[in-house]
Image 1 (cartoon, rainbow over the protein chains, first blue to last red):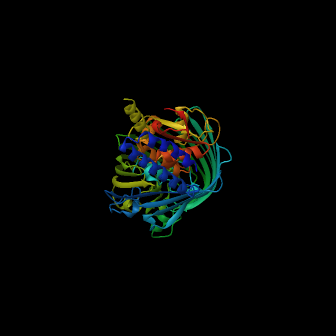
Image 2 (image 1 turned 180 degrees about the vertical axis):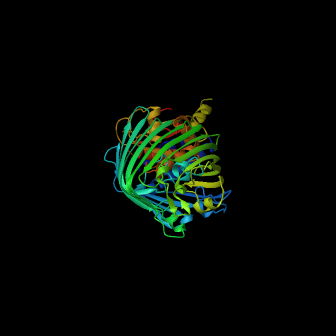
Image 3 (image 1 turned 90 degrees about the horizontal axis):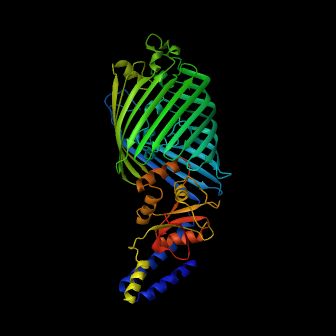
Length: 395
Length: 137
């Protein structure tokens, strides 16, 4: 009924402008607007408690050989990069939400998988508690790992994001936000477990414990993370390739640690991101150090970028034996690689971005890491080029 | 002469083409003033509280609206594509949802005047007694 009061000044306006037909038209248009807004208010009342968002990616990628960098070979495959996700946020109470995220990937025949299913509770403005299935928060882009639209690149740098293929865990976390004048610090403690398909086979992590500190003044962001878990890793995928049964267990309940430092700078024009990570796992599973530096610059709707990445295994002494007796040495598990990417993001319209990327990986001196082992053993490949064209959308 | 100037003044009030400056408006029971940085923090998910401590409920104009572009140019310094990318990151990392969007100044005034703790923005020419101006950015 307040709307009626709003119409009173309009009536006055009509009276004041009776001399001008033009103004009468304007007034009618404005009354129409008022009606529209009343209608909108009626509509808005019902959808406040449930919100749906989604993201979508598709694209083509092709490599100069079958080295299998990021799983990409000479064969172009559209489905491999395609994914569609739907996220629902349900307000249970004013302070409690349930969040569900379903992701269907072309590479998995579009079978929808639940990546997020958690309950979030905010007892105060600065404290958030969550429990359920969530992303393992070890990288700067872990939370938006598959949301291509939220990333500057065609894919996250594989030197850092490649070796750890597990993406989700079941557990709980607590985040506390310290707000300062023009910056904020967020501390997150997390714990839980996971059992997933990794790069080389089955990965199980028990008793995960970790702490994550992120400080930002909204231009600079600095982040540190440390996590530990009991790791059991069975390289069943590698084992299946062997003509005779092999012991493919790389870690059996041994201590695994992860350390990461990240920093980014984004002033609206320059976008500079770097992460340095260390993985340590007792047993034959390779301990690796890795890093990348990414520099991008926005020119209107175009954001070209260059990335340099590096990864190297540190515990070759633990892999002196044979993976397949007399045929394949354990050193195939060693990592060493440098990678260089040049690409661009093009925001064609808010909500849709196209990305093109060329990545060159080389320097495989110590071993092939998680590249295509069979091909690498049968061929004298020393480098690979990967070409990617991708569309990312969020809605 | 007097009549002409009256028509001119009235058409300024009515015509949507007469784009004056954007002003930040609030609910009548909310704070009387707010700083540029506090408004920026509310619209970039950095804060959820008004200066008087009550929970803030920001509203946006819908995408493509010239007042929205003017507001963000002055207050958050982000263009439409940057805002979309920013909010998709917030949404898909579980950090929050963007403000509800309204399609007209009238709808903005109606929502702000009927929602305690709310904050919005309209063209200065659209201001009336239902809302109060708390910042001219």
